[in-house]
Image (tube, rainbow, N blue to C red; front, side, top):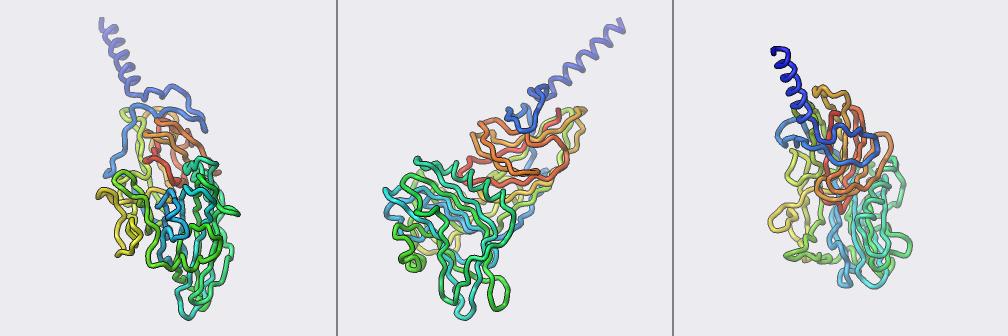
Length: 382
């Protein structure tokens, strides 16, 4: 009788252990495969202290509104601001006119005395086929940007008070219904002192080629966006930092053998987001630098942000392996990441790509424009 009770107790313990394991824990994970996220998986608390973000990098010039460009928004500045030294520029637009549109980054030297040298550090470019799929263009641009090493290509020396036009669209421009995404890091240097220099940046759309670019870059107003009660077309301005470094120190246990954190979660982990600040309102009129917002909700740094995750997972689950899955719980999404090489993948809603099988490593990612966020990083003992 005693032996039978002991066997029954052992059986109950085994059943409990099985119930505590994620539902897909017995399906062997393979690096590079797409698989459903484990259930259950515990979301790491924003206030746990186990996920700590630090802001890094340089300011970001954001031009994503008007996202769809119509005739009245051509031959206009889409966003204009002053940058200093090293800065990131990213632009995401769709041509809704019937003809071609060219896009220029117009760089004016505001100094009355000193020349400025302009350098391109690295860039990524993508455009779409007819239909204007911004997401695919963004995926191409992000992958290209992440794949390039940091260097320095001299572009121009800009005399005091003069400007330089850098065309970032493909030769001949973007045809009707096509989308364009461009991500680039630049540096402006004072020729006399060798120090960081101020430059006045304008993102221009034009159907007149290089004619009148200086005039378009110096108007008292800029293009209006397509903002209204339903359209959140207001994402243009400046972000303070281009990067984040995150220290992730999680412990997986027998009770919680799977945990996840979200990426680019609005209002999420401390120091993950910047506030987007704009010097122009949605009507294109100048204003004091103010947060961009929609229905009172402040815009944050959702896209084109470099993430470096220093990951350290302690496995106290009793299971032998630890895997990382990267994807989206809320929608289909493109992900771009680097552990040893840059990889770009599309995942379906509720799925992740198995990207690693070690508990301690460094992960680099960039969240591309046009993704539905947040993305998800799951750490799973198996």
